[in-house]
Length: 447
Image (cartoon, rainbow, N blue to C red; front, side, top):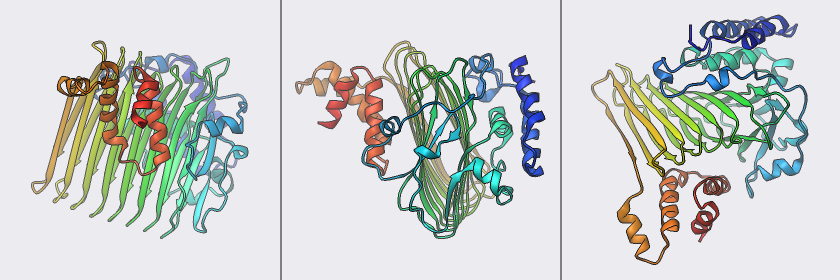
C-alpha cells in the first residue's frame, strides 16, 4: 500500500464508478474497468519511497479533490485556430475535458480503410473489435495512474489503419482543459493501430483554456504492425497551474518504424512515461525529447525500451533545460533480453541549467542479457559554454542575446529533426516565450 493511500474523496469516486458503469457495456470492458479501479484503490497514488518515483512527489495531485467536468465548456473556433499550427493541413479532433467536440473537429476526406473516431462513440456502437487491443498494452505495474485512466476513461481517440493505408495528412488531437469552480480531471485514452505497411503522423497536443488548474491523466496505446511507419508527436503546454501525467505504450512488429517526438513545456507537475516493446526483428524506434522546467515547475520523464527480439534498433536523444527554481528528471532504461542478439541501442541525455536554483537529475540505465550487442548511453548536466559565449560576444552580440542563442541551439538539436515545419516553428515560439528574454530570442532565431 502506498503512503499516498486514497483520501475519502478518491475512495468514494472509485466506489461510485463501480456502481454506475453503464448498462449494456460489454462484460470484457466492464471487467477491465472494474479490475483497474480495484488495482488503483489497492495501490493508491505512488510516493517517493518507490524507486520509479523517488524524485517526484504526487501529493499535490493526491490531496486535491478533482472531479469530472459537469458540462461542456464554451470553446470557440477562434480559440481552436489560435492553438493550432499555422500552415499545417491536418485532420483535427478537439477534446474538451477529455470529451470529443464534433462541432470543432474536422475528419473530412479520410481514405477508405482508415477509421478515425471518438473512442467513446466506438465503445458505444461497436466495441467488440476493440477487445484484443484496448487496455492490453497499458501495464498497471508501471504506474497506478494507468489503472486510474482505464477505470475512468470515457472518451478519447481511436485510430485504426488497415493494411497499406497511408494518412496523407497529419492527425491533430487537441486536448483542452477548462477552468471550473472545482478542479477538473480528465482521463483521455488514445488507441492507435497501424496495420501492416500502414503510415500515419499523429500529434497529441495538450493545452488549456485560461484559468485552468486541472489534472489530465492520459494513456496512449500504439501498435505498429509489420512494416508500419508511425510518427508520434506529443506536445504538452498546459497552463502553469495544471497537472499532467501521461503514459505511452508502444508495441512494434517486424520492420516497423516509430519516431516519437516528446515536448514538455507547461504544467506545474508533469510526469511522462514512455514504454516501448520491440518484439520482432527489424523493429526500429527513435525517441526525441525536450523538456523545460522553469519557475516552480516539476517535469519528470521516464523511458523504457525493451529489446525482446534480435536485430532491433533504438535511438534516444533527450534535452532538458532548467531555469528559475525548476526541477527536471530524466530516467531512461534500455533492457536487452538474452535472445535479443544484434541489438543496437544508443541513448543520450543532455541537460542545461540556466539558474543556480534549478536542478535536473538524470539516470540512464542499460540492462543487457545478450552478448552480441552494440549499446551505449551517456548523460550530461552543465551550464552554458563560456567559450561559445565569448565567441558570440566578440562578434558584437550582447550577452543576453548570446545566452539566448546558445539555449535555442541546444534545444534545436532535437527540434530540428521534426518533419512538420509548422509544428516545429510553433514549438520554437512557445519555447522562446518561456525562456529569459523570450521575444528577443524568437526574433534572433528567425533572423
